[in-house]
Amino acid sequence: MRLNNTKVYKVYLKSLKIRRKYPYPANNLQYLDMNKIEHIGIAVSDFNAACSLYEKLLNTGVYKVEDVESESVKTAFLQSGPNKIELLEATNDDSPIAKFIAKKGEGVHHIAFEVEDIVAEMERLKNEGFVLLSDKPKLGADNKLVCFVHPKSAGGVLVELVQGIG
Ligand code: ZN
Image (cartoon, rainbow, N blue to C red):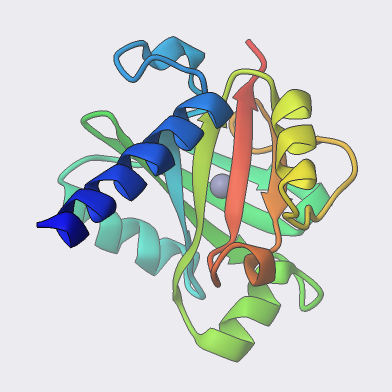
């Protein structure tokens, strides 16, 4: 009985600490830093084949195709309900996508979270010990400012922060 009470008390203390650290009301999503998954990025080696495959899978058409020269990728976006999928094909051998596919093959490449203030969020993550792949936000696909978090500091997952710019 006593042990159980100690356990309950520890959990209670832990919850207080979490509340102090992240003082956002759970039911008020607009105050959360990473308020939703904006899209999931998938590395593909055959752009047209992948577009056809995901159009069939999601039963919807690609609504946007865009080259992102800074990252040497060609992207296609599909939307299913509130969910977005970004297909990424390398446009040259130096592209991060070419390197990813050479190492791991096609598949899930990154998870992108929408943020309200990307600079503030980058600062918060840096202070938490995460390694960012750029010092400043970059212009990414789909009219977004983006920044990537190194997978080595994020449990093996490449995390992208995105902030819409109108
Ligand atoms: Zn992305």
